[in-house]
Image (cartoon, rainbow, N blue to C red):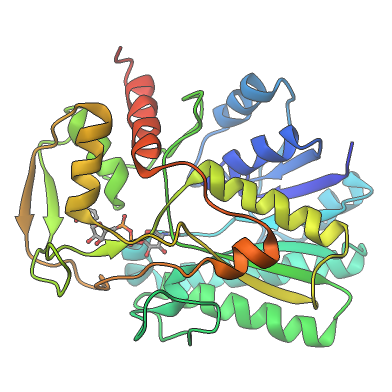
Length: 342
Ligand code: WQD
């Protein structure tokens, strides 16, 4: 094995796809997840895809005692990928203390254990939400961060600051933060994918559930923005491409190729796609019509954001590969699979 990687939040949407790519790359994986936004069945599905069953521990990282026991039990952990966080934007507005406690304390406990057990490498799941509504587009890693639109977004900003300040105090722990744009799609096997709890907040699962007849109609939140077709623009990144960026980051750290103890990269396609543009791409890719209606703007939405991916392409040596249409088709195949549709 090339090394043992602890993946927190490893049964989640992006975490599970990253576990698959880590195993494909020859790493041994240990998952810790509290299953607050996923199910243990995902461990079976990962095993079905790769033939290797990752070790799985169920608990929340706020429990420092259990986390210490896991580090003791695991003997040598070569690196950690930290996904485990609460991430529903709307819920974070209603329950800010729960979000700050969980998302910040989890990272702090993790750093405590990494320091105590001499684990030197961390890949952190960050988000383009740290940029707010950028003044200039596309956003580079030098684009100033702005006040987040939600407590969830602010936990990402504060976590990056915790990493920055902890790195100053403990420079022997090296971190790469990946700022995701909008992750979408599913594994080509359709064995793992996005499984939102209840009514989806995010666009693509709502699109696929509408196409599957589970939702009556998609509401498009506004077509009066200052964009070509009036709807909001985002940078939709294929989840498997995103997962591969984590493996490349782990290898960069293990091979000590990182330039400094704290690096961060925008992980997007570099292409801005509007909501209506995505709908048309979905219909082209799948042949499925989506029943939608233009309604008013959603509070907190920014008008447009998409990445300048030069740094990830040239320094990290990663670029997105799967097209928007193929990604949307993978999301549709996943939806049909979980609904037992042919
Ligand atoms: C995309 C576009 C909506 C649903 C959020 C978080 C971000 C990350 C991804 C966690 C927007 C429009 C959506 C719908 C719509 N989350 N939309 N009808 O808001 O860009 O990003 O999710 O890591 O941190 O901020 O993603 O998919 O919710 O929305 O018209 O039913 O689709 O207005 O323009 P968003 P989204």
